[in-house]
Image (tube, rainbow, N blue to C red; front, side, top):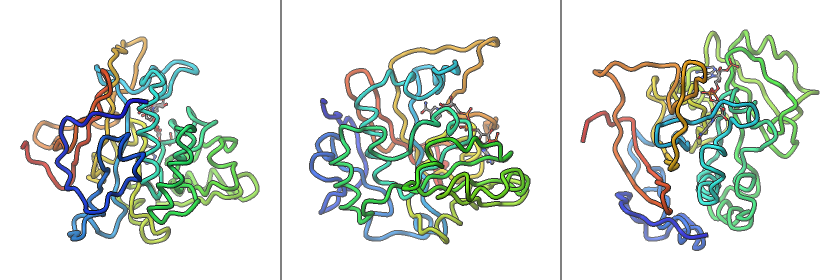
Length: 293
Ligand SMILES: NC(=O)c1ccc[n+]([C@@H]2O[C@H](COP(=O)([O-])OP(=O)(O)OC[C@H]3O[C@@H](n4cnc5c(N)ncnc54)[C@H](OP(=O)(O)O)[C@@H]3O)[C@@H](O)[C@H]2O)c1
């Protein structure tokens, strides 16, 4: 696989790279998070997990074809090997991976582990997690649902080696009931009338020691994180195709469920830009920045 070519990167280099040598070469540089820097300020290392999202979108900003059995990011990326490798690297950095319930159901056969998305990289991804002090445990998996309507046959809640949390409302928790027998390594967290993203990130930090949380979507969940200022960074792969959408065939963009006003729409700052052939790999930081710089 050809390595990414870095066109721009304003992330500060560290004396000792975070990425292991093979991933450093493939990613076209290091993958430094603010929490890696020797001096962290209170806006970065606060009382909640730092949250970065990763998505792939078409040129026209579509994130799912929304067709039966053709509704995952895989169709959007065209099964791109380098995109899968980047997903694996981003998962390897995470203490927890967060999915909305529709993403969970669309990907019910899959686990949110580094090796699950890039099996050929399993050994180097395991070495990366060892280097980060994360041992052999997979990232904690989180499924967010207001309704509690979760099919408990999905791999994420069925595999005993995969710890998982279903984050839901009081009503959702009541609907789920006691899942101990149905999903052995899964815990239900109830947050009241809604699931505020920042409250979820605070609880992950306080109760599970999660410092880095990766939100893998979908668009409705990303909208909730953006709308509440709970998103710190976005990694966005731009796949060189157009998906289109119509009234008869609605398809999610990158952000759904929230419509910002011009005066309050969040702005982002480009942190790095890479490419592999015609695929672009963009990295943006958000909170606490809102300036158009
Ligand atoms: N291209 C990509 O990178 C990418 C990434 C991820 C997903 N996808 C695709 O995008 C589609 C799914 O995206 P989506 O936007 O339709 O759905 P989604 O964000 O995956 O899930 C939406 C559901 O999550 C729950 N939810 C979201 N925010 C919540 C909040 N603040 N509090 C409580 N519950 C919340 C709700 O579940 P309940 O309805 O259960 O209450 C909501 O209906 C799938 O086709 C998936 O494969 C693509």
